[in-house]
Amino acid sequence: MKKIFFVLMFFVVIIGCESNETLKEESNTSDAEIEEKQDKMLESAILSYMEQMTGKYLMVDTYETGSKEQQKALDEALTDVNIAVLDIEDKYDSNLPVVKELNKLAESVSFAINELIAGEYSTKVDNSEKVGTYVGEISRNYLDGELPPSVKVHTGMESAFD
Image 1 (tube, rainbow, N blue to C red):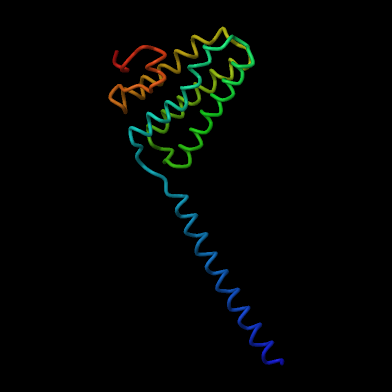
Image 2 (tube, rainbow, N blue to C red; image 1 turned 90 degrees about the vertical axis):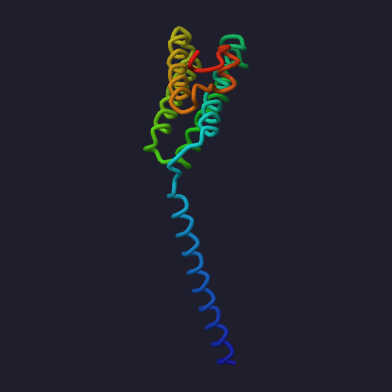
């Protein structure tokens, strides 16, 4: 009986050690994959991030100033900006020039949204112009002037070169 118990314990220990080594290998692979970030961003991704950051922000004027609907839209717009930033940080090398410019755009949109959430409407035009400047720069530098769809609709411009 002792021999059977000893053999069973031996197999349990061996199986446990093998499982532990497999988990270590899998976790090392996952860490390596996570650390590899892309060193190039496709034009479609740039355009998508710009749309995500600006789309709902541009639509807040369709609501009555200070209304619950506008506050909800501002909250959603800020959430979209934050999600885009987190996604960019997760996928792309932070030293890419386009990533730096998208981060500046995100900061300006976030600032503009937070000003509106705080009830500061006197800076709205200036903040919108700053956001537009970043959108134009990114569009001209990386997208041959192509603008995000919401910017086209809101401004009536077809290109950043117009």
